[in-house]
Image 1 (tube, one colour):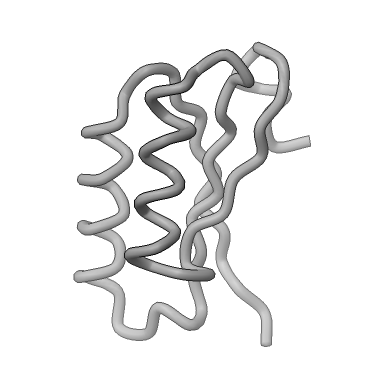
Image 2 (cartoon, rainbow, N blue to C red):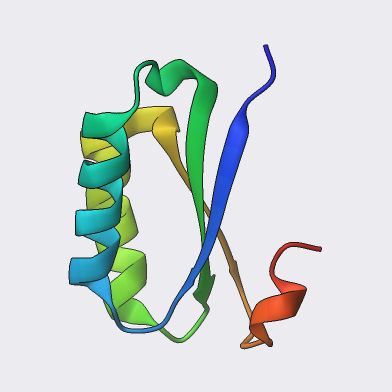
Amino acid sequence: MEKISIVLGTRCRPLNMTNMCASVYNTCSNPDYLDIIFYIDSDDDLSINKFDYLQEEYGDFVKCIIGSRICMSQMQN
């Protein structure tokens, strides 16, 4: 099954992460065909902690890549 992935960068915006996941999950017709992938800076403890919570809440619907701080255009590559 092919999926549509929504790739987002975040930096100390845990509330926006929560709102995004809730909005996409609650408005899509079939969450099995979507996933949200956050790129989180390795020193962003707020977003890392929020991701852990979101993964418990949404399971495989949310994923993350944790790495060094990079430009937004490099996150999708």
